[in-house]
Amino acid sequence: MSAGALATLLVAMLVSSPVFAATKGPGYTRAVAADVEHLQFVQVNGVKLAYRLAGAGVPVFFVHGEGYSHELWTSQLDAFSKHHLVVTYDRRGHGMSDDPITGYSETAHAEDLNALLMHMGIRDAHFVANSRGGAIIIQFLKLYPQKVRSITFADATIPLAPITDGSAFKNAPKAMNGPPPSLEQALAGRESAKKSSFTKVAQARPELHAIQRRMADQFSPRVAMNPQRSDSGSAMHIGPWNSRDFPDMTSMAQPMLVIVGELTDVFFIDGAKEALRLWPNVTHQVMPGTDHLLMLEDPATFNKLVLDFIATTESQLAGRDSWMHPPAPRD
Image (cartoon, rainbow, N blue to C red; front, side):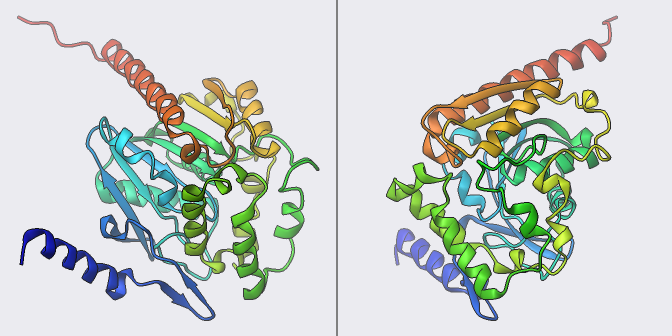
């Protein structure tokens, strides 16, 4: 058997193994990732998380939003891994990670992220977050500020502004305060997410819509059915800002890049504007012709913006470190 044939056989065996089979629960299934053969798994905080590594250098962690998976960052792997260690992963209840019955608060997700850093022996990193990943990385910043080199909010939840009637999320606060949905309702919501009003750019492109649909089919209905509704109904999730957690925004010294799609939901646009107004170290960018999945819709522009921002941040950090810790004089 040739080396190529052997490699193909091994991949086929892996994908067909129970570890990589579609996840089944009572009354539902979850799809398999397209790049499953590249995934690694680790047990943290009582759940198994799937993640993917690429490249080497200063780490960059990518944090996806609700209903998505590590595949959201498909178009970032090659560009970022040329300069950095890239980590993409599936949050609990998403992708190919475990889906516990409860435990989906921003704090739980932030602690999972910290456990991943500890597992990999990573002291600090740059973070890129989309959608609800923004609220999660803000909570991570509160808990572990020393581990954050910078944050890029990529059309992300920044709960600084109230939800207006013009937003697709206008009914979210009421829904989160009500009873959890049934399995049938949760699965129906998973289907409707594939036709979201703020992902129409991706929906219009078959290759991107295929990724969007697969990510949605990997999303566990248990997240929506979570009996502890307060887990995902905090002020951090639905806005406005939780001033008890962040009484002094001027102390947020880490560099922030806030990118929004020109065509995205007003909730993300308003949050980004408030971040620019209120946070001390923010760069704001609008990507023309894109909406919520801008990292897939226009990866060339997105990658350049984020890589340039990280490079600038690294240069600033190096200058600060050399000033604070000058080399010892030679004898």
